[in-house]
Image (cartoon, rainbow, N blue to C red; front, side, top):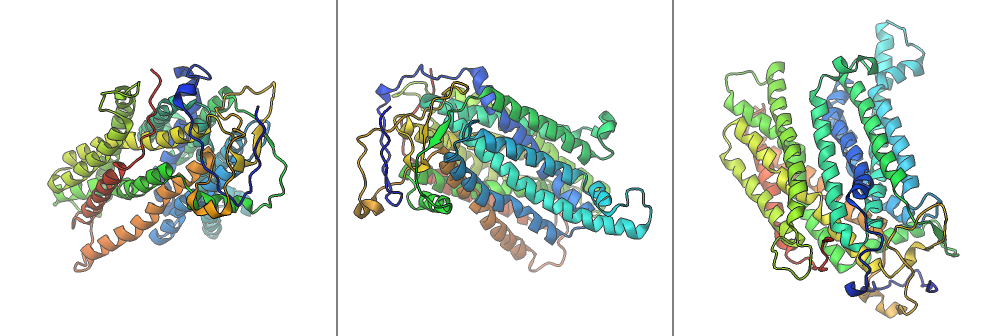
Length: 540
């Protein structure tokens, strides 16, 4: 092993490209079964997300929170993504635990996720235990317990979002760490499939009458669903954690202060490699399109339902149930389509380079944005809830691509640049450990890597590991959520400015929010044309 080259932390360094012909493609290859076990954690994560998104708002409303306060609670999602993912990525990059760099964060984060789920589902019971009034039937006592339940539920929601983002950041980094360069596309395709499977299981489970099936687990749908989610979540994390062998690293002596991690995150923005920066630029506009769909697709179907049933009372509970269920059914079909697309589309990508096969990941990625744009434009012509459900279901195709290719491109870049190099700015290096098998593709750095002078600082790129790359990538996904919240509010206000009647189905404001997202996807398609082709392909 070549001696590590010590670099000044204030001097950004260049990535050293690796010649593909020098790579041993048979070394550390993962079988399909190993890929499934590695990415199983993503199914449990997505199932948990589905439970929170589907039942979070109704449950908070049942506790007495207003719409404005619920909106503040939902800020936990983008805030945690903005803060936790890059922070966990940076810290785990430098960790030297015997379990590896990622699994300790998966284990601790998983425990906090389960604790948070229990806090949400049983917030009323915890409040009664806290106040010592478990058997009290006094009305005033119940009101006081409900106030405490609100605090517990809100705290649990924030804890859930922050902890699940920590687990997600670690799982994504692990999926980049383990497979070799030529299996990055395959690994991330399997991660996308697991996400879609988690969606299907989540939406399907939500349709079942769980209190009738599992009365011993709770007296409400949410309680039983949270317990089921915890079981599936724990099993998925166990499968991944017990089947994966991470490489252990030892710390290189340095005297960096604790706040050096913040500097590391700043440098990730300042010196992000050009290929990753272009991917992030595309992701920013792509998610400007995705968030309107994720936020308002169910509402849009309900609006169409209201327009096609003008004689029904839009304030009637039965009407609201039917309209909402139509939207939920559309999302269930959407999840089935995304699973099918996630399995089929990766099979068409070329297995060798160069190839005459036009279905490269880059062309597929460009096409996905165009398809999403076209689907959003069809909302002009939707007249019935059945047409609306079909539109929602068809979005599963570009969604499957969105959950696969961007992460595969980031992973391919990280592995391409690190097949022959250890990342110096993590301040760790691999050590021999008889109990933990070496599976990571990171090897020792070349001793011939040139030092970069301060004069070249503004022209060079910093070197980062998988955790930090994914953390910054995720921040470009989170930023659009704040922007879309403001833009959608402006669109709603514009359409409702001259009307006091803002009942469901009264105007097409939601449709225009979706179309705005379509135009953002078109910009993403244009930017996708400028992505740098690393000529990476799947294993034949």
